[in-house]
Image 1 (tube, one colour):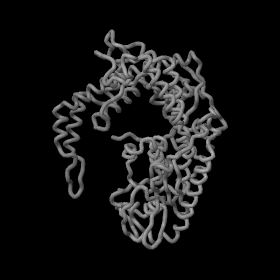
Image 2 (tube, rainbow, N blue to C red):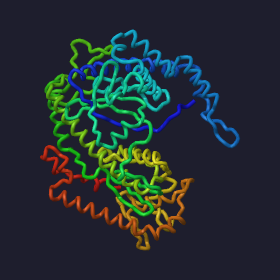
Image 3 (cartoon, rainbow, N blue to C red):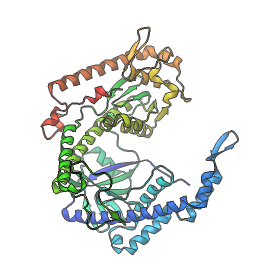
Image 4 (cartoon, one colour):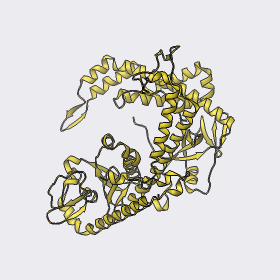
Length: 514
């Protein structure tokens, strides 16, 4: 039986951590990391046993679905065989809970550092990871190293990791949080029911910062300016921008607008890192300083063989790497902030969204850097989550069946190159390609077919809205081009260094504007 689920949201608070408390937290995280890796190893052993069992092989040979009347239903015999294979080799979440408890008790230091609820949650985390391999979602699992194990969480707010009297309590450890009581978002989270608690740390400006996340029951606080309206919206998602057409509003909004890329600074730091690595690892390079292919160290049973050098990185190397990570963190934070503004702007005009089923992963092969800087996949997933949370819908339809970018208002299809950004036909009709595709997306029915009659009827009312959006987009691009030409940058107030970052300018919106 599926578990009963209720809507949830997260309230995050920074923790006030002294050096003594931080040492204790890190020791507990290391205990949790060792337990997680042990559970993951055990889960993968059971996965291999399940895959090699006769029950599993027989199930794989059966068809996925069978016909029952006019409908195709999942094959019950196949499911029964899979269940038998799981039971035979005790591959289940609760069996892994039992393994985690026994492992923690046998290693007494783990039991002293990690409570029973957190042990079970770590076992669940390992089980879900291994299950992805069994289901073919992932090819392999990754074991956690110290720098990559950044969060632990409890099961309830009654025992283990708890939030009580406006402070975090984990066994005998009590940590106060920095609470902004004037912030309505924080106040709403503290007043709501708490399901469970998560502790995590992030590296900011080269230092470890600790946070507590309260997983609350209910709906998050909605700021007055970020309201969600009832209405139908057609979307056209691209690499660098998104076009939307609502009942009374249309727009062509660039992703991560005015966000610094720090590209020159990152490249400069990467070169410094490479020079440092070469000077400290001469054995791993040829005399002409080209890197040797293959494994640079000899490993046997998980340990380095004596006499074989591993990568030897200096303190300077790690300092440079920390600076590079900080620039990448700042860039990602700015990008998310700007893209969330786009999401809120679209949802102000409607919550029933229709869009093409495009593959952002496919775009990564051709436009990798643009996808990294612009994050269209993040915008798409957040729009879906927020629209459905507000009682709306998010419908995706096939691009091959509809071909909106090739379709004109009279119903004819004319194939265009990606460089052609304007619809033109023999009658002299012109419209921006992305805006027109978003307009047509509004008229896709439940059978994923385009209703041209409905689009033609609405065009007379919507033409002025689309032309106004196109004109606004052109004016904004001209303004950005002028600022770039003058050497200015709209986000100068966000930058701390005040050096070459203030002269950076996004030209990717022109190069990848499709």
